[in-house]
Length: 280
Image (cartoon, rainbow, N blue to C red; front, side, top):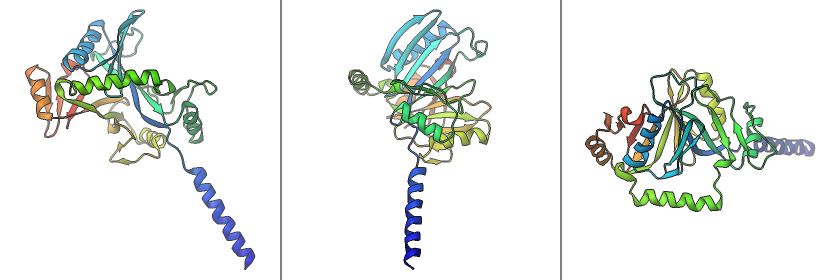
């Protein structure tokens, strides 16, 4: 009897130990950076003016040029929109759309190194340096031609940068979110063409919870997966303080697109093709 009790006790300890080992930490904490590629310099200037002047978002860094491409970044309450291009060698350079979302960059849960270890444990294909103090990981398992997915230590904010970031958020608050009353990016829509790709994301996003293909992250924006003919970023949902106030501004400035029961879209002619949905 004593031996049986001992064996039973050891079995419980081993089971609890296995459960502890199997419990996974998150790989990422939030969406930190999104790149938007433009086809022409005119589209670049148009988008910069749209976010900076029309919507009055703070500028993370002002336009600069590297080679033939221009770069700028807009601050959207802890998420960076980097507008860049044109890139003549892009496979999308001859498409009708003038601007399209490209790279999706996440902040790691603890560090790039711990995220790399967790990706390896989950057998999620990835690439990136593992011996550097600053790690940028490419999540090959989720990459598509139209949406590279990265995890970057560089998205962590140093104390010096934190002061700058806080000041940008303060500017946004002092402007009451600008003329549309912007509060945050509530959701990012990601397209999927098959269940296999969706399952890869589910494995990547553990242990976060989902409901009807909406994955809730610790910080906004959340990720909503929608059936599509392409696997890339399909749309953004901006949360606003007052939908009616936002619609009035858009209507008065010829920027209002489709209107639903509890939402409104910004006219794609003004966003150069980007789909932006407003909700309270």
